[in-house]
Length: 116
Ligand SMILES: [Zn+2]
Image (cartoon, rainbow, N blue to C red; front, top):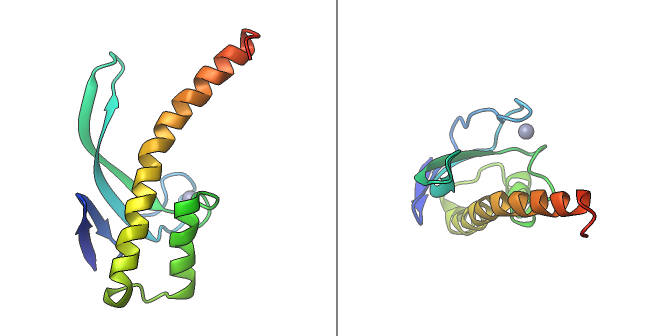
């Protein structure tokens, strides 16, 4: 099964393994995003993320998605709407996490300079 929500393309059938731990992924989301390249230019493109039951545990949206897969291993048309909402939240979280990482780096730099 695959679907499209807000520009997000989902793949649930045979999702790839997690890029971080190489364990089996639960779904693959492909979504438009923008980021800065090494020369600080905005780059627009598609990101891909596999939902991993090990690595993604702990994020609010990811936990809800993992719970959905845990309760109902036949994720499909009957709960496609809920799945779409949760995936949209998770993708928002992924987009923001990148920003949070930059903030953390900045805080870490301030801490190292003794300003925090
Ligand atoms: Zn993983």
